[in-house]
Image (cartoon, rainbow, N blue to C red):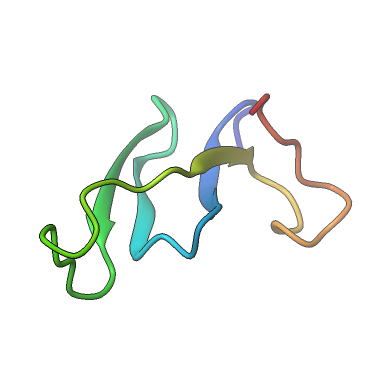
Length: 69
């Protein structure tokens, strides 16, 4: 795999009902989408951090390199 490819995103914080999906590993382009229904009347905003990982063993593996939060 070429160096610096983005293989995954991980979302931290507030049990945000979202998922981040990698669309293009080389450019790091991704999409954020709701993973469950979102009711904007009951909760108007969410606070969370998205972390990017380049290719390696996985978010729980020692080989993955994290971006800065």
